[in-house]
Amino acid sequence: MIRVLIVDDHEVVRQGLRFVLDQEDGIEVAGEFADGARALAALPALRPDVMLLDMVMPGMDGLEVLRRLPGLREPVAVIALTSFMEDERVVEAVRLGALSYLSKTTDVDRVVEAVRRAAAGQGLLEPGVAALLAERVRGGGRRDPLASLTPREREVLVELARGRSNGEIARTLSLSRETVKTHVSSILAKLGLADRVQAAIFGLQQGLVPLDEALSETNGP
Image (tube, rainbow, N blue to C red; front, side, top):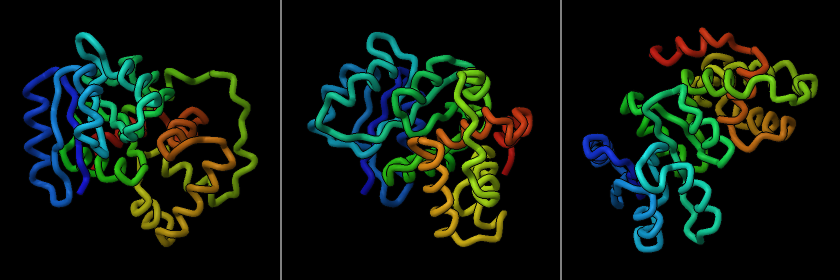
């Protein structure tokens, strides 16, 4: 059972997320809070696997929660939520280790998918958010390491930059899921990245997928 903690100062958002997650097999809402301080204090008792964390809240906001999590003994995977994709707080959330970065207007099925992936230690990239993150951090001075990738790994990286899951990549490139998983692991190792979300953002930074195309994926199937 995946235990989820919802942290958002808007009651309507919390109610909506709880309603959606309560309908899902294998997921239960462990609790909900309107501020970061109370959520942190409740972690030892609630022991959630995943935290849906609003980036902008009065008092202790999402970024401060992310900063304090490494000092706690209760490991929890974080999905950052934002009302505005251009919010610079999301860029900082990337650096602080949030696994996924979703707009509050994200389709409910994608939120559920993000929760399941987060529980497995995987991220889910919303293409529109990824494109704007890449735009904000573009030009950071990182040396281009694409020469270290094989042609197939480049193809996989392109699909990651489009926000595709392993299953979608497998279908697109006519590969097995295990082969895609192997390629993703190799890409992360070669590029020195922590997860597929960072790989997708890197792919956008390198121009493998035009920003307008990545943004259009947000409204895709």
